[in-house]
Image: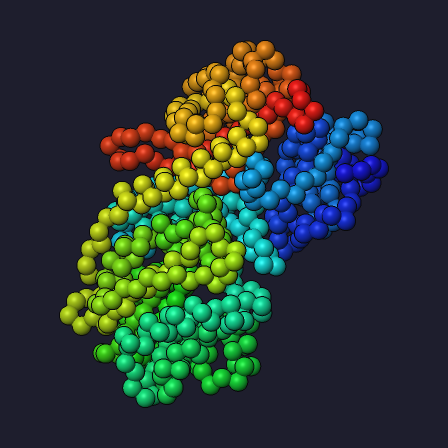
Length: 541
């Protein structure tokens, strides 16, 4: 940022730049991904209220519109203190350049366990994995810069389902936001493939009623009409804008702008009900599944598909590289199941008679991994009470799958650091984080560890007298949840000053834990690796 900065009262100064679009707005107060640096060190608090910047200062700042409202770290005049100020828009992830986006401090992301029943088995024995990621799509681009203070991501020890606890409807957002997303061209191939799978499995008499739950702009219904030209169609879509667009298209479908739990529909009336890629949005899953079964007639078929699984590799155009990719892209995603658990669960409500898997690549030119769909066909159950069978426990399988994803993400982080010239490192931190980090470093095989320092939790970063310029390393890898800020302060006091740059993976990176009576190694949330780089483009610092 270039001087002069405009004084806006108190400790607040304003910098402008034509390249700083997409700042925060009243509707999206955490949209900006800009990080403000003072002499190479990130300032304290982004997205700060302007009144706090004026009255408290201390490095608080806000990217608002095309302006940066900011204060210096010591509340001095930034026009006269001789420090360099850099505003950098940091992407979610740039693996190739070894760059990582700084996220909020772990202490700010702690959320207590919340005891709401598991949507699958109704159990209360849950394990908190981490606070809920809370990103959103803005003008078609994903902006993931916040963590929900009210929701946790938990795994049920009774069945292995992973879900938001609790589901908070007012935090949800409309799934289809832009008219451009209503264009069927992008999705014609997917729904043609699906219609080709449904037609040989489902026979509909002329005039049969078909219900599509979460129909979007009605793509599947329009495709199925080729096979069932005389069926009567009811489309359930909670977005009023999308429902209005369907009616304006001139089609004769009955369109109800409502969620399934709010709609009053006739029981035992529908010969076919489909639910494609929306059941993970249900706010009360068992209630909504049971309600759908009540709507089927005696010969009715229920088809449900999803691509939101613990083992999933990609959501449509978005590869899943880490746990933030898995749990962050859509605030309305509430439930993650394993692929086999999904079939097991659906079979509690209907008699499953077939399962299909197919690849849905709506934009194959930019998809790094295939978007695998799984669909389940079931007939209305007559002999047993709906939901009567006990689900199998998939807890161990899903913990292992999550660990594999975390490990994959962490190794990618380390390879990116090595590609950025970080090879000889010192490792500091607390147990069990240090052990987990050293194991990953060994598996990565790209680093030389010159020194390892382990401190008890709560005492890390207090005594780093060994830190001096004679230790020839490219950087310090810090593995500590509780003490990372003290480690960073020590690095600065050791003569590195503002040259010690904290770099956090934008998502859950490393994992640690202990194996005890409770079972496998536990996922730990927000375990950063903090890299204090000692090299610059000019050489030694």
